[in-house]
Image (cartoon, rainbow, N blue to C red; front, side, top):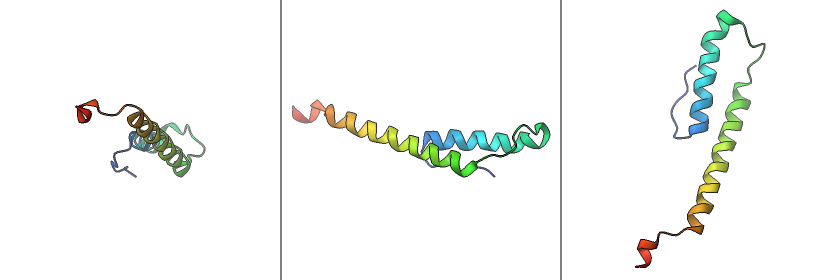
Length: 68
């Protein structure tokens, strides 16, 4: 099941890795269970934390060109 690109780096990376697990696990049989939804939920949460941190950083460091 391929993942779609939604602009979220953590979600994209997690989706790509889950796709590789799906493709290789039939041969390797390395995973008993794969919590795809849980992994994607944690990736979305990580992207949300990164976005929140970036918003705070932007608020603390305004663009000085607009003040000139």
